[in-house]
Length: 211
Image 1 (cartoon, rainbow, N blue to C red):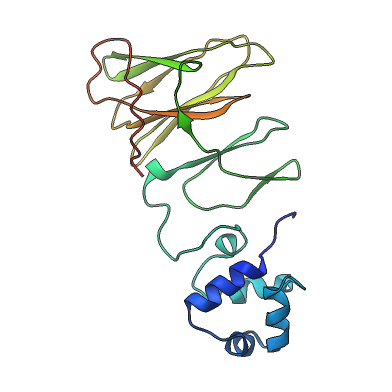
Image 2 (cartoon, one colour):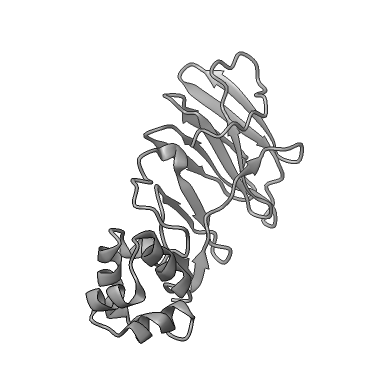
């Protein structure tokens, strides 16, 4: 694993819970000098201590080693806050409903940050009965293509995997879909918020966040 719990995270959590280094050390049965070494990046806690540290702060081990700011809340309650990870080596797509530590081909993956759909990545959406027909105006060569199209509602994610030399299009059930995302293998993740009533073929590029 090329990412591990950092001293900065331990210090942030310790101070949040109003513990001194000595008090944390007693709880973990280590010396206060050991805690100090962690927090000054002169050492790391043994892997056997990760679960006890996480338990003290009321979080999961995954949250502890995620490297992100940690809060003890139900961050996976809303599917609109879903995260997508894409491996740059094999193109593997991983979906998470909350914080996660994910590796593929030895690479620690970061969640894709969606950008607003733009003129180089135009999206056309048509409503056909209970479905959205979605087409992305984009090349689909082996070197440059749309990898997937997804629709997200508050309790569901629909995803259609696409392949080079195919069509950059998908059909998704409307059924509460509020956000549509698609991934370009060169330019990353794009997002638009679907309009409530689609009567013509183009959507507006409304990127109001729902999460």
